[in-house]
Length: 122
Image (cartoon, rainbow, N blue to C red; front, side):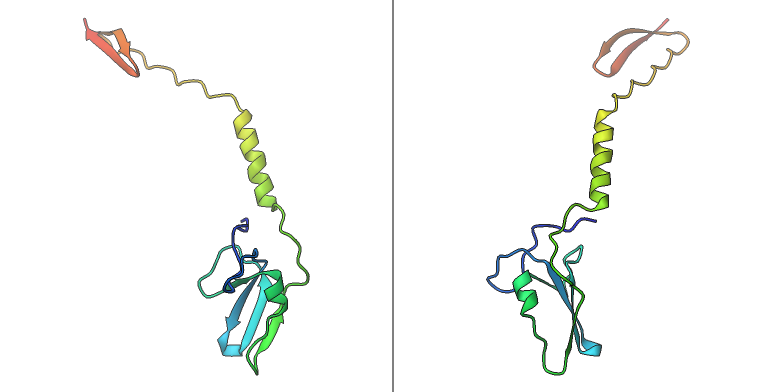
């Protein structure tokens, strides 16, 4: 899944793009700073690079940083595969229309109106 590029830092008045996601494990008194999650979670905070670097936790809490260095996200393998499939699908010829069924015995087609046929019985 691709990460949505429109997500912004959760800090008030910060308009920079988010690069990391911060979650808290209250039972362990741990703040975990990891790569930007695929989806915005209601109990997680998206942070820009600057706010992620300056992150501090409450006294007695441990901060676990899973982010090594900021690397701008590029297209994932799934994105490239989806693009290749879309191009392949667009290049296929249009399917031929299904063969029309033969008229029932005793009927014949006398005209057409769009997709409708006018049949008469003999």
